[in-house]
Image 1 (cartoon, rainbow, N blue to C red):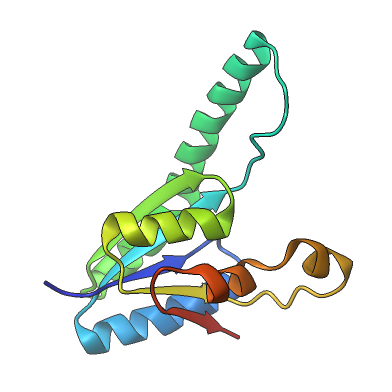
Image 2 (image 1 turned 45 degrees about the horizontal axis):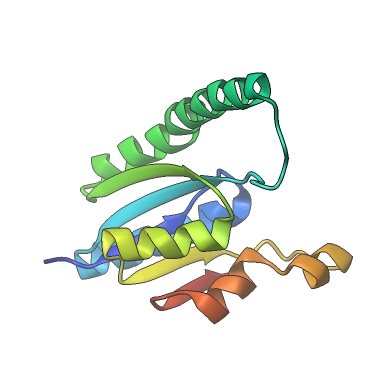
Length: 144
């Protein structure tokens, strides 16, 4: 069974670097790619029934848009290069979702791009790469 490399992809320059790195390694190792796009959201807000219904509708639209606009073009491009590629879109905290996906899909490695966040926000909340480096269930490669 071939290895699976889980690559966090959001269309940013950092995720493009992670994608390039991961695709090169997958090609060399005969590994499969799992491209994951995580839509962040907070479960800590209190909503009315109408707001919950509206949020569900928006979430469904966002997932569809992420698949067709962000992931599908990349999947087609990589598949055209002979790579085995699967895509997934989920909601939640990015590092937690990526860790869950690694377990769910049997990924052997998580690959993320470093955004270089600095300052108060990075110190208070941490970065996705920093959190994964500490808590990922499989090896994590952080691409500068």
